[in-house]
Length: 378
Image 1: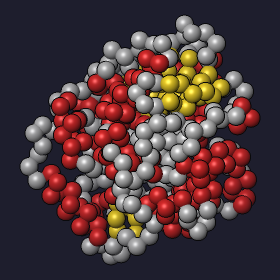
Image 2 (image 1 turned 90 degrees about the vertical axis):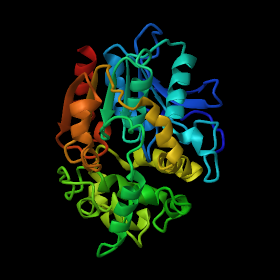
Image 3 (image 1 turned 90 degrees about the horizontal axis):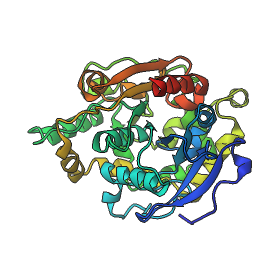
């Protein structure tokens, strides 16, 4: 990635500023801020997912700031205008292990001159990072809100016998289906995935339009339900953006779901001008930085590191928010139930928001802002 200045003010809602913060850990993080006028305000840290940016929080930052918070949303490691680290395929993957992403968040908090934050809030792949922040450093991350990706808890120690074999059996089972299938997370670990999306036939802008649409409440096929088991047959019920046809790239998978020009013009949660911010950034950087997060999670050393926390729970106040039309809540069978039963000991609410799919804080920002403020006030 080429170091650039911060996003121009013309790309941001009035009241949100962009700047770079040197974090002392090799990263200079590009952050968006609202409510920055008073340094005494309690701080909120907002962590985005894939394929997203700090910009994904633009619709909830001002309501949170209006309630008295200093709201900070970074482009995370490998994304956007954050500089430092390696965002190419043949890199040292340890920098993308979850605990190092927690270090990134902690380094930003310290660089902001803070001892703690009132809450860390994560969406999609930012949700497990937020969860690990709260589990590993509850003294710094005083509350946690998880969005779209439940947290079931740390991996077992020692690892369950045959665990790797069971995962491989599921992948082989998907490949044996008719038609053959593959899991999107495994696809995202391949060397080809970045170029498949970056240089796709329809272009990055139309690829992202179809991808975001396919996972939103605007796509009528998103009617999620709990899956019965962690098996190939059960996973095959997931939409194709999660369990893909084996011979398709992600760009080819979402292309048939491209909304019509009229539907695009009517999309108030992501008008084309706002989508252009994403498409311009990913056209410049590619997707590999974000894809490295997926590659890191399948490394055996990653689970071995996280298993240090086996048996630990998130004990700070927590909540979960997702779109009612979001399959992310159920894409890994059992996680949603485990989060509620044991993963979070002070879970103050699980909210499935009407009229929202996976991009809940963009599709229904008023509802999400209200739920977050209710949680933060408790």
